[in-house]
Image 1 (cartoon, rainbow, N blue to C red):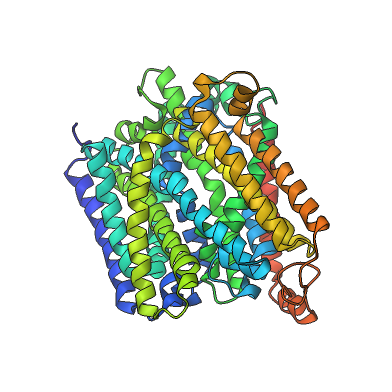
Image 2 (tube, rainbow, N blue to C red):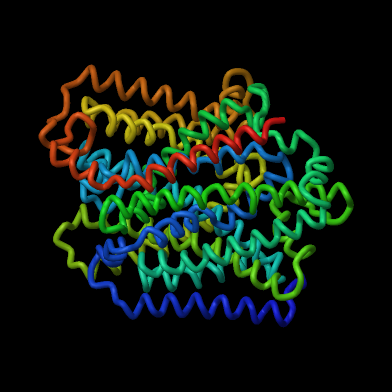
Length: 538
């Protein structure tokens, strides 16, 4: 396989890596004194860096590769997931004040403070397994495709090489290294992707011509309920359930906002991250539609949908810019990997190891977190061959389908736990375990669906987003029923951790953290989301 990069591209790519290494070295020289420094960057990060880090954590190479591939294959329906920008606002306005009041390092730790240690244990182990089967394996797989296509080296060499590079600066520098390198990576990724969208539109003959060539169906976000892949009901409601889990309760994302030193900065970071979240529609999904149109015009060709973005880079970009976009794609890969590495080490160290050995010295805890990172990477690589059997072969669909099965019970427990003070620890753990059983059954049914028939085949083939709705309704019913059938929690013990237990001081602090500009920006974002939803109607 030959590389598509020329001498100038290699220089651009080299400069990018040099800048990345310089940022990482600067962070390492700051030194991590304790676990708060290592896992939450000393809780002293500004809103711009938080927002950029949220975006970079979300937009991995699986997002770039997978979203462009889905755009080429199916058009705009997956834009519903990118319009979860409004859910990022929920993180800032609804969830974050409760997380800050709890003073928790991690989401499992918050569950223990709100419910009990059983819920903490469940979410700790469940999160680590979830990271392996959704984030680590998918990101490594997508990274292998990108590096193989752009640099002309074998898939596994590229994937593992970039994992090692990322792992080194993540392990040494901790959260500070992750969050500051992600800020640089966000700028590179957006710049490179905007250029490719612009050049792609020029090549296809402009926006109107793109709509004509691609066809109205590729520009329609609202597919009928009977659509086997993207029914609008599943995209809108099932997608929201997954979105609340991902954006508001997942350590991977929330950890960025917890690195702020107060609620106002954390919320503002979430608002900035929400604005950035709208961009993927125009810089990843639309390029996929452009690739579909260019293929119809005979300008490009590709064998698999997941090859679309690298093929666009090869075909459209001049020398120099290829190096920049190659850097952007690797930035996406590394930022996602760095985030998940740091989240895994945080959860394992704080929620599992420290829980078992509470007297462990801070220095030893840092080393334990580093070892945990290495183990998670190895498990992610092992999972890749299994991953390819789920989700119909397109990377982004795999990611969304698996997340649709693991999200509903966690969303139900966090949402009800914050909104309704009556939810108790028994209800939380029963809901979480029930959801796990259904999720495992569904994933197994998908893997072995060729040998199923009747009701079991129906269970295996019901649309993944509709499955999320059914699982969420079941989880809500279980959580409410068990809560009402058992004793209420000790309200004094959960003071400040749900509505109905807020003190006057809690309410005042929350009110003082609200700024008029933040309200205006949030409303403008919601208007933008509604405008996009309205525009892409077939």
